[in-house]
Length: 490
Image (cartoon, rainbow, N blue to C red; front, side, top):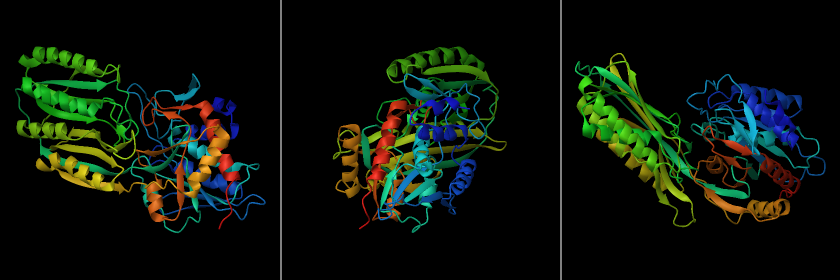
C-alpha cells in the first residue's frame, strides 16, 4: 500500500516513510517495526542493539575521511498517536495507514498520519541506508512509547550514547529550530462508586458530542479549540440545574496528550422529563455551536435512546460532575520571558465513567505541562484538588523534566549557518510547549548539545494531521548538510 509515496522527492526519505505508513505502530505496538529495523540494519552491516526498555540503537561508522568528526546522535520515536474519525473502522494494531495527496500535503484517510514522528524516523533510515552522504560516526536512537509516557527515553540506559551532539527530528515547523521544551506530568484519577437502581429513572439517552477538530495538547492548547470532555462536564452540570436525572456513564477522549474530539454520556430520567430535556439540549447545542463556530465549525451535539442501566447516586453524581467542571484545562500562564509561548497548561484528556456488575468506576487522566518545573508541580496540585475532595485516588505519574534552552551552544551556531546556507534565511529559534525527549535524554547526558527541527506538520494527534511535501526536501537538505559539515572532535 501507499506505493505513490515513492514517486515523491527525495525518494530515499519517502520510501522509508512509506514503510512507516505500511507498518502498524501505535504506542505499545512498536515491536513489529523495531524487529524489522533491527534485521534491516544487520543486512546493511550496521551494529544494532535493543535495550531493556525496548529502544533500538543503530550505529553507522563514519564515511571515508570523516572518522575524526564528532559522533552525532540522530533521534526519533517509533510510535505514533492512534486517533481516528468516529466513522472510521481502522484498526491501528493491524491496518496500514492509507495516504493521499491534497494541495501539496500528504493526508491520511480518517486517521492520524503518523508523520509525528514517522517522517523524522524515515529521514534517519535514509541516512543509515545511504552510500553517498558524507558524515562522521552516527548513533541512530529510536525510542518507544513517546506519545504515551516517554517511557523509552525515561528508561534509556546511561552511558550507551557516545555522541556529543544530538539532532532530534521530532519538530513540526519549517524554518524553526527548537532549543527547549516543556516538562510535564500525568494526573491519573480513579474511584469506585456504589451502583444505584432507582425505578423512576426508566428512560435512558445517550448524549454525543462530536465533530471537533482536536489536536496536540501542547502545540494547539492556545488555539481556543473545543475540548469534548470540557463541554460534556459543562453540559451535565447545566442539565443538573434544570431537571432531575441520573448519570450512568461518560466516555470522552482517548489520550492524555490529545485534545478530546468526542465524548458521550448516558443519562437516565423519568418519561415526564423527556420533552423538556430534548428542547433544552437543542438550545445548548445551538449555544455551543455559536461559541465555537470559528474554531470547531463541525461541532455537533446529538441524542439517541439507550439501554437503562445502573447509575450514580444523586450525591455522587453531583460530586463527580462538580469535580470534572473544576478540573483545569487550557492555558494557565503565558511565558513572561519568551514572547507568544505558553508557559503552563493542562489538558483534560480522558474521562471514563463505566458501569460494572457491582459498581461504577471513574477514571480521569489529565496532562500538565510547563516550561518551569515548579509550575508543573503547582498546577498538578490544583488539578488534583477537586478529585481529592471527593475521595478519589490521585496519582502523579510519568513525570519528565523540561529541556533548558542553551542559546549559545556550538551546535545551535552550526545549525544557524547551515540553515541560512540551505534555506537562504536564518531559522527562528524557539522553545516548544510540548514534551520532546531532549529534556529526558539531556538529564542523562548533560554535556550533550541538542537541537530539534523538522518539516511542516499540521494537526498532529488528530485525523487532520498532514505533512507538507515540499518542506520534506528542505528538511532533508538541512540534515544532510549538518552531517557533511560535522566538526572534528576536540
